[in-house]
Image (cartoon, rainbow, N blue to C red; front, side, top):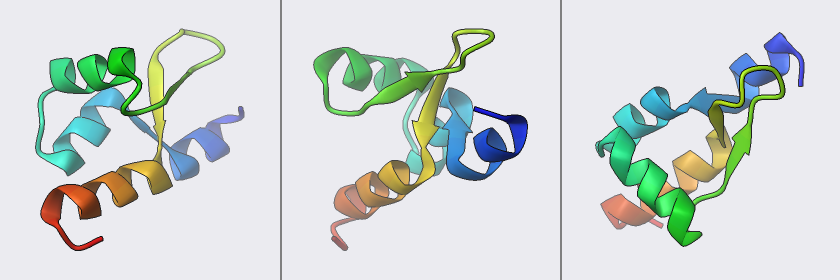
Length: 65
């Protein structure tokens, strides 16, 4: 994963939580429960969320999907 790909296709856990209107611990919980899939950054191991998956989940939460 290069930096340009990471920035355009993936969100950090804080960015994803902000877009969904939930807390960071909630996203970690959803990840553990299998409700959301996080990828790990190859260098630092941080969770990264696919932007498209977050958009789909946001639509489901808002009831517009």
